[in-house]
Length: 255
Image (tube, rainbow, N blue to C red; front, side):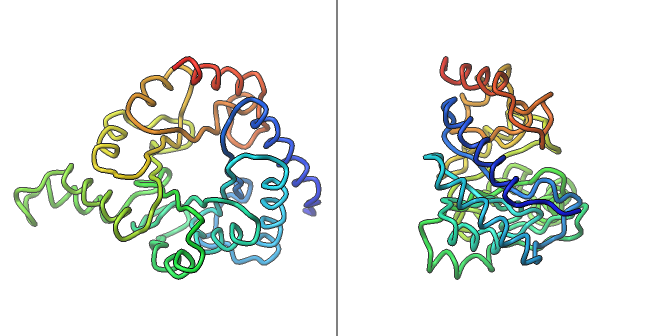
């Protein structure tokens, strides 16, 4: 089906301007409608279209603009950011190997390192234990901790601490994103607390944020990425509902 890129640009710019007017500080442009996702985005039309869309969004507002190319096209997203003026990317698997409906996905950090060296101003926001997937490393760590076959003194929390350290020290992450198992569900508060405990970089909640839970979430971490709640009917992928978006930002301002 033919889609006019100009229509997508108009929609994305309209969404960005609305969020800016309401007081939001940033926006992520992603290929959410491409589900089911390939491991990597290789289609040149998609990459060119994303670059054009993101550039127009960045030009139209003062929001901090980010790029996410699902399922895990971090290198491509970084390239889009370089060409478009975006300030950060979101990466689903930076230092973890994950199993997802797109298959087994390798960590993106090795591919991003050369770009990060040459274009250091673009930040990497990395999911940790990303939703809609399972981390091979952490799953094996849990098995080892429970069966005492590896390092008998280790606990599950020890493995998680090491994972957080990997993201920062070897992955080059500038912020960590904590989610639940799927879109629209909030992350467990104890997971947010543990991530913040071990992370020297900002920690963000990346799913299931609502006016009802925002206070408890922001007591523990540094910020949130919100999608589902502020959309029409609370469904990710729909246009932004001004009233729902206004309600959430009002709750944040009360804190």
